[in-house]
Length: 102
Image (tube, rainbow, N blue to C red):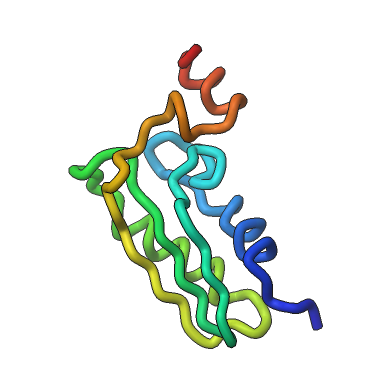
């Protein structure tokens, strides 16, 4: 069985897609922190805007994806808007190109 690590969780989070932008939340830079401790995974992330109507959908995807990993006993998510999401600084180069940010 593969050891549960922050890297493994971050890899799994690549599969969580923002429904509006149709891009990975990892590529968008929305995940700020991942903490793995004895089967408990804490994920601190943000949304593209405070008024994002699909926040609950993204939260559900995060929990579903990470819960599927072996060794996960609990997934705790927290949404923050500090710092606010800034795609020019936080998104991958590929996402910046797709969004036309250069």
